[in-house]
Length: 463
Image (cartoon, rainbow, N blue to C red):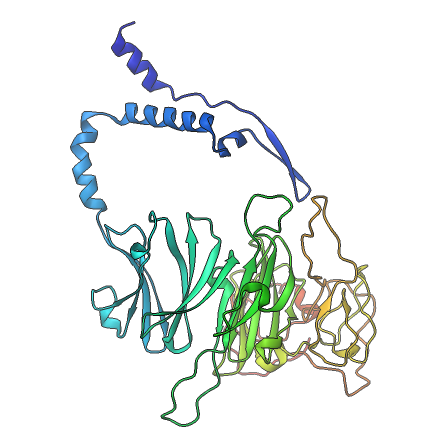
């Protein structure tokens, strides 16, 4: 065999990769990874990487590659533009120029300036000291576009510092260090009180809600990024996450919250996988915020939007709709922490703790602290832990909510006292198959035939 034949033979076979199976027990499932050893940072991994690179170069090193290199390089030198966010009279966009290591966040005063050099480079990681691996991975404009919050990570570790910059001055005003895996959808601004008089200066924000996590340091005994807490940070306080008000520390490992806020209202969408969500809400002083059920225990997706102008909660859902639908309810009712009268469930969930506000309890299947306040915090009386030793969900998830129970044992009791709270009347404002109705126990059954869905002018009726 000649040398050229040997080179051709080498190019035909990539370097072999040894298989060394490692099995882990995760959430009760055994998962085997034959290539776990490649996650190491040692000489053997470096040698394997070098061999793979040499093989790739040998295969790609052809006259055609040299002829096409310049053409590919010229095609690749383009500007990359992110989506535009609007807040007040300002617009915000992330732009990456060909010579930039990291994208730059720009602010614009008018729509015609978007994508041009007329914008202000508000956050430019390329000017920061270091090797170019510190990046801005997300940003959220504040009320009226006066401030911008953004997440800073190093080396793609998704371990963020949350920083806030003044849009007019371009100066940093606040940092919440080591917030963990906070993301844009887990961050929600809370506006300050409205100013008095038409000429009054707009107030600073009250603060922001955010999802904080532990540190991803690889230590099995550490909390890690799966340990999540919803917190409220007072604007200008300069406190670290540990000092911020805890809204909820019962978020399960497999659950990721999305936060939506408007005025004094907060709605948290707790996503589990891609097929179901629970909704929790609060209305009041954010410094004392807790979460009460809005829609829970239903195997469907519910995506909330707060319509502050009409003081209502909109929910896009695939519950009982082939192609999804949009429901609406008065915001005050949806966030009141009340539950309707309904049939008794036959499941074996723990009973609620009796209290003077039992008729207003947000859901069954969980205990409730003894208090007369309808919006009081509730938690499971029998938390469980999986084989892995970590709780998959510290928050109790009731089997029913305003949607009623799939199976019933007795008819609903009559309303005998004035304290029996009525649920919000959900009104369908756009859907794929369902007529306008109030969601209740009977609404879990699908209609016999597909119906054309149009906004209804008739009042909703109970089934």
